Length: 505
Image (cartoon, rainbow, N blue to C red; front, side, top):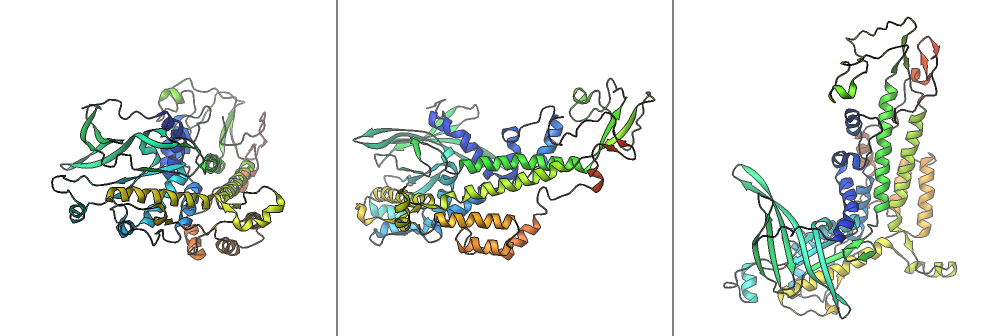
């Protein structure tokens, strides 16, 4: 059986895809951001393709978004995830290798939590191996064959479609399509196999893409559970089935803003290091000069300048001279980058700030002990998602487990109060003004739980030292401060205000 539309994404998927693309590009680092090209780094007017590629390849990502996601996702798993003592032993043994890949439930859950935190929601499927019904007919047969339920993480962007219906006020999934890929060895070569897995309450089916881009059914079977054992955890506020706003989306956009600003800053540094050759009273060549990688049409009518080139003019009043950069844009660009870092830092700690549910000032201090940060609330809801997953595992094992007997404990004893946030604001400003040392600053962050307990300031300093100087810390040569002046010639005749480098020509 073939189906050409089995991979068609749902409308909810299409609505979420732009946010996921942004997150995936940032999580992919500098390489992914460069490959994204003009999606995140617009090309300047009149900037040639070669010039744009050069600017893009000189731009490096300060990946604050990825660091924040990793740091926040680590906090709920600073202590192991545990099943309650009343949980059946059949479920407790699953926690040591919850995915059949050797990961215990804590390590596995941390990665799943991070994915949901970055993208707004994530999924995991409670699966069971396909067994031969003739050989495996009893629970003892399953145990002898090593058949047991296991958790499979399904990233948000891999679930291309999901549909549900509400029965007696309860939402039930009716249809799910999951995209998967697999690398297979083909002789001494390899091939990428694209697969769509279709799940419904009473059946499942697997489709693979053929060489002619059709989708062919390669496996199918009955769903023994009678429902789709997929668990979806929403990190952000749910807007609809498989729709939400990623909680760190503002931070992602701010990181892209930093990416763009750093590109301009790197470009202006490049321009400032080299004086610009200008000419007056010169007639440009009509063609054939300056042909480069972009072809003759892009550089026709431009002078060729190089060590083996002689510049001449027939106009006795014409002359060539150098115009050098003022350096003012460098300082402004550096300040912009520092401001963006501060803004990203502020956004990064928002989820850690404990907030009381009572808006009145009188009750705020009374309820401070009961207040909860957004990240703590996320950790609690993620624990509920894990509980549901283990209930599904119990259904696979055909054991009855009362809700009161199955509790999953996820660490939630962390967070910052509003006073902590105010203190951090003071610390950020004091450090920016060089009123406290870096060692003292990091020590205070570690004491307040912003940095991990095992954070080592000395090792971090060594890592920073190996990264090289920060963008904007270079200074132009002293000769570059005399803007618009030809060497030994005073002010350039007819020269207007200096245009900051990095903008449109």
